[in-house]
Image (cartoon, rainbow, N blue to C red; front, top):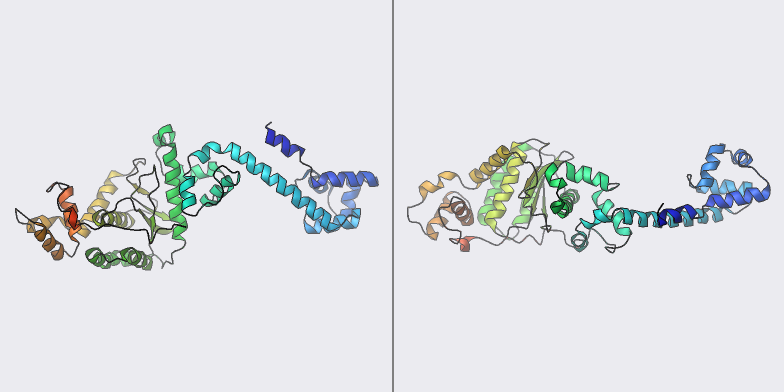
Length: 365
């Protein structure tokens, strides 16, 4: 038995005072039960601390034992408070390894946690953040269904598990803050045409507009900070019947950003509600066919492959801008596609790309 468990065992219960009082009065537990209108087992539960002394029970004890009800209420409250602190300390010792893989500093900087990193209270806060009762449930909900067996067994990836789980949970929390219409597949598919206009013009409030348009079709779009040791660019999944697209600020250029968005949108439109897609995490057993389908969906929507036919053999940045206008997209998309196809070096045309700043739409307290 641990030192903390010893302290719990030695903690004085309100039931100790009940025993002392009935012994002084020469009353048995059976008689006390009869006078309280309770069964003997219930009275035994009160004495052993299994049963909480409620206000109603305190009033009954006042009548039977002649000790003020307020005494019993305060006695119970003080006992439970001391017991809770000891259990928090016990959990802290028990869950130290689990806490070690959690990105505590990141969660504190984002305002999700308030307690000191090495305090017993941090365990309770972390569990409340994830909405689970213990690390066992945490692993079941956020790890087992997302990661391959080999990845879960690797000590080298332990911290990545915490980062991934944090990323996924933030998406769920922030999703609840978005006012959503009921999901309509056709409306969402049609909205991608409207979004294409935003791709082309790329206004300063593109992120806010994107969230609003997606919400109108029933899709939750959440932007999240990049979590260290969890190199995720995007996630597509269904949470409680709601399609959720979650993107990071990992990539800072608009060609990467828009491709990632349309890739995840492709997953929502083309694939099942039970599918979970975590991009660039290198840790899940993804269906390569579905990834190829999502890539093709993003490429065709942003810039059909036939654009190459409209390019002269020797083209300039001016030609790329012309292609972008022809296909109603942004020049950065053209550059990105040419770089991906290895038609130009990665140093070519980067001045046509725009920096993406998601700081205004990412929760930071």
